[in-house]
Image 1 (cartoon, rainbow, N blue to C red):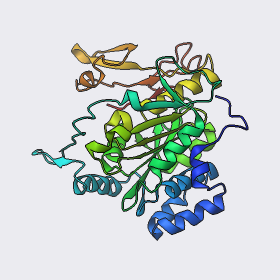
Image 2 (image 1 turned 180 degrees about the vertical axis):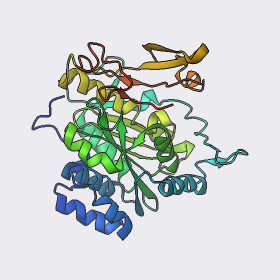
Image 3 (image 1 turned 90 degrees about the vertical axis):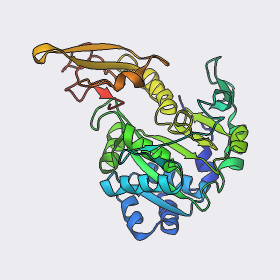
Image 4 (image 1 turned 30 degrees about the horizontal axis):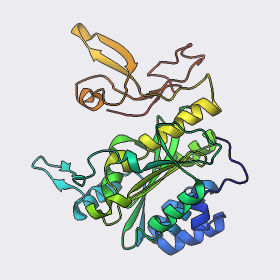
Amino acid sequence: MQITEKDMDIITTLGKIDTEAKAKKIFETYMDQEHLARMLKISHPGVLIRIANAIALCNPKSVFVNTGSPADKQFIRTLALEKKEEAPLAMEGHTIHFDLAKEQGRIIDRTYYIANPEDEVSSLANRMDRPTALEQVRSNMTDIMKDMTMIIGFYMRGPVGAPASNPALEITSSAYVAHSAELLYRNAYAAFDREVKALGHFFTNVHSEGLNRTEDLPDARVFMDRKFRTTYAWKCTYAGNTLLLKKGNHRFAVDKAVNDNPGNELSEHMFITGIHGPRGRITWFAGAAPSGCGKTTTAMAAMSSSAMTWPRCGSPKTGPSGASTRNAEFSALWRM
């Protein structure tokens, strides 16, 4: 969606960080030397400014820059247990997470597209004008991470190096959400700078569970700002409402495929799966994977691969279908 002069980027308006120099001052204020050094390995100004605005808005006690190392993953797992977002199971290394009793699914009634009057939005979706959304984010996310640790993750929706992949930031105070991101997505901290520069875009996701109380759920919201490819979510923990690399960023990926690269790229719930047969035979299946079809259950079966995909059409290496699991032109969202 084309950005015009009248469009207001909510996170920049609220955070008031508009230069790389200001961003680095924010990092110096909130980060210890180790995490400052990690942060400054990212050099893309747009990424730095986006993260700094999230910090300025949410005002965390500290900031943890997740590099995807085994030690960082363990820190997140331990934090999830300490915060009681997860509880240990009898099987070593396994945990369980319980969402609030009244948040057992997506809060569709409290999920909105941020849209100007002239913007086209599905008649089935909720919409909110930009000034109203700004005030909602201001009143609910200002200082929401006070006394909490903000975790910043750098991910790829698809393989690193694939032209249809999408770099995405996951910024959250929930160790459960950060843990889930590590399980479901490729941590691309080391390649993030290069990928953003090569692809020319990235998505941003800002979330906080707040006090994680049932009485706060009426005030929970999920916002998707398609023009600035940013999601905001607060006072909720269910993954469909909080791990917006999935549902929220899928909308941005569809926009990118349809508006920026029409005829060359798809962003759909699809899969390519190899089923093992007799004498080492593998039979490959491709198909659609709509909501409620049993994707998660099927993924538990023993298969060569099961993936949510973005085929890139017309590749000279793969032909018109672009469906090759061995080629960088093929982008897989889920690794199961």
